[in-house]
Structure formats: C-alpha cells, structure tokens
Length: 217
Image 1 (tube, rainbow, N blue to C red):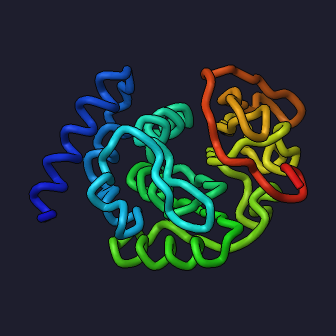
Image 2 (cartoon, rainbow, N blue to C red):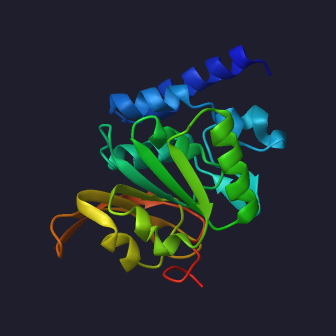
C-alpha cells in the first residue's frame, strides 16, 4: 500500500472512528491525524493498520484500538508543555500521539523486544521528545517524576500507589482497573493535593493485564 493510501485511510479513521465518537480535543484530533499508525504495527498487519480495533504486535501484546488511544489521551487533558509517563508502551503508538502534544514523554515497556522496537520506530519518525526503557511499569519512573499525566495501557487489579505518588498536584492518571481477563473500568485519578485524589469512571474497556510488582503477578 502506498503512502497516499495510508494517509487517506488515516484521515477516514479520524473522521469515522475518532470525531464521530465524540472526541473533541483539537490537539488530540490533530495528533491522531499526524501519527502514522501503519509504522507501529507488525508487517503482517499493516493493511489493517487503520481498522477499528486492536491489533497484535507480537509477544502476546496488542496495539490499542485508535478510539481508545484518543480517549485516553483526551482524558489526560494535555494542552502542551507537560511531562507524561506512558506505561505499557508496546509499539510506541500512544506515546507518539501524546508526544505531539506534551513536552516530554517517558515510556516504560516490560518486554525487551517491544521496548527496543518502539524506541527504534519513534527515533526513525523523529519523536525526539520520547524516551523508552524496559522496566516494571507498575513502579513508574521515580527519578523523572512528578508527571503531569500518566497513561496506563494495561488493566490493573487496583491503582498502583507508586503511580499515584508520582503524579504532580493537578496531574491526571488514566488507567483501566478491574478483572484480569474481562471488562475493566477506565478510571481517571486527579491529584488534588499531596494527600487527596479524585476518581472518575470513564466507562468500560478491555486491556491485557498489567503485570508487575504493583499489578498482576
């Protein structure tokens, strides 16, 4: 498939899957228009890159449905200049979307081959404000905190305390919480003060389990 064809399919994806479903943030919509999702999928799935659903990326993991990526990015309420932590970076697609808006994105992926590939693709595409490392995402990245936004692309049994502690006051954490292998609740946790947080339920989602010390074992 030629570049022009991918661009046309990406434009249709944004119109039909993103805007039509209620995403209104101009920054998120523009980021979804800019990021080439076809570069973040495995070769055998490239013709499906702009389909309305998740896709396998290897190692038993998936790239999220485009709408879910947009929904989570919008829930962070980024307006530019923020420092964001991306947990479960996977292919790097969501990190690229957030990097179009935020000042700096730090990504954590627990599977070495995915972390390496994500870092390589992001670098090739010129996202020099994204840093990816292989580590336990449930523990966050303390030395880079506090974060204005934290986005978690895997379902947790409960909100990891390490991630809450690394939120800046006023910052937002978006994370699926619930059952390991069924529908989870997408929650937005806003840090109101040093000790106070507000939790909102953004609806039902389905993600792979968040594995790690403060996730599923």
